[in-house]
Image (cartoon, rainbow, N blue to C red; front, side, top):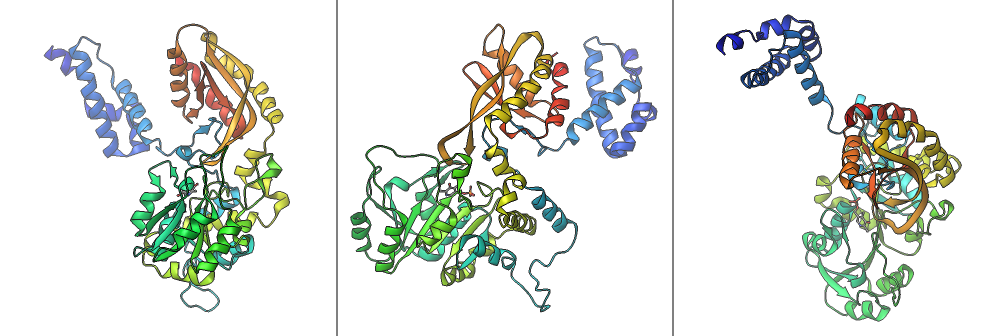
Length: 466
Ligand SMILES: *Cc1c(COP(=O)(O)O)cnc(C)c1O
């Protein structure tokens, strides 16, 4: 026993081996030695239970594999084949090349973030985008924060922070994923929630009678992003709410959620009010997200009346919620694409993906079918299937887009084989994320743009499944 332990190669011997040299060149001595020690421990354990002693090079190779695996970034690219275009868990909007370039440039050098290059004096970080946002939305003024949740929090805190009443319809007291619940946000903002109406019906007179209470600061309209109430329903539309708010001398705040700058009907989707329309309808403040339908980086955009925006900017919380230079640069470049509507679809991934036709996607699926069949082997059948994509991130929850994909079914056995296949796809160098529905693993190809990369990646599946 002792004799065989002594035959295990030393750390030095492994460092001198071919694999050891490579190991040091790639990861440096410190990491190399630590991985070798780790592998030597495993080797001693293996020898204890009767395994043969590995040579120095093999142990060096194992250490190399260990370091390679741990050097892969956790935030590496994945293939989003879930069929949900704006998947919150997969990072929502994929950015336009112009936005990527702008963010990279802002990382690589100093930028005039809070510096006015004309006057040489201190500037405001939001000023870079202010005029652009006003131009695209028709608003008087604009400001930016970390995300739309922050926008809602900051607006409520500024306008109703010391127990001011905020009137909301019971049909709009939403919960969005990740513990964003409107009543909780209002409480944290220091506002006093005044619920009006019922779940399915709220009328003008409900708002009117609530306005008779003392200390009402605002009326909040919330876009019911992730659900729709149908049937015997009634809500008070923004123009009427604006009239009511004005007469009472309180602000109307409209949380649009996703907020789109373009008419979505051109993509065959239900018409959503655009930000410009929400502003024109008389809201004093409108809030929306940067990384939902807008197709930019995570951000919360607040637009509206000049004096209210000024008050919001003066709130000390603004400093804690501000946007960093990378995202400001990416957002500016994204918004500039909207100035050229003719080429917007081609340049903005979110809209480009939403606009893909079923036929286009099905043709891609036909092309990839032989490779998919070859990659999974005899255990599974693969067919081109019809499916429906979703927009995601709570935008138009009930609207789906006809799509196509690759459908994998296990020839025998239970859902276990399918789960194993889904796991193997997620274990690829660029994890492939699909969805399982009715005994079929579906890879919806709507969001597949890098076809070559996908094909190469899929080639690794046979080894993974073996
Ligand atoms: C998504 C959404 C939010 C939160 O926006 P984030 O950008 O995710 O912080 C707030 N309100 C509504 C209505 C939403 O749809």
